[in-house]
Length: 105
Image (cartoon, rainbow, N blue to C red; front, side, top):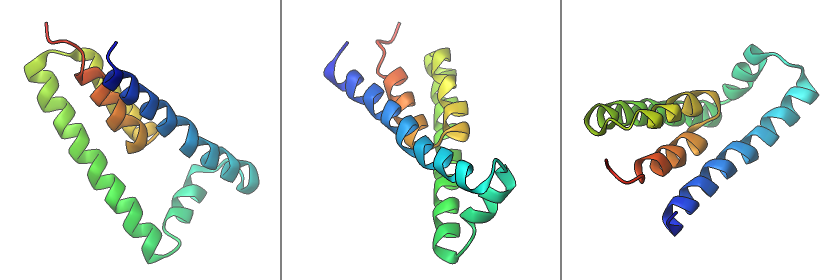
């Protein structure tokens, strides 16, 4: 495995663990309500702007993944889509780049 592939995988792991630590900490303090978390994301204009920034990035990444998977037939790369929406762009993007860096068959 190349150094770059290791870097993509390490960033995907970091992009999973680091944000999840904050999410779990918040859930433990505030209760396990997804809707309460969504409300917290929109507590002011700055956080709403960040939510929309990440939403647009996630949609763009999803379109990119689907368009490349159709051409490259690298079906495993589709796993980056649920990673993006269930964990975040911080996991989905480097995970997709990890899968994309596989040698083309």
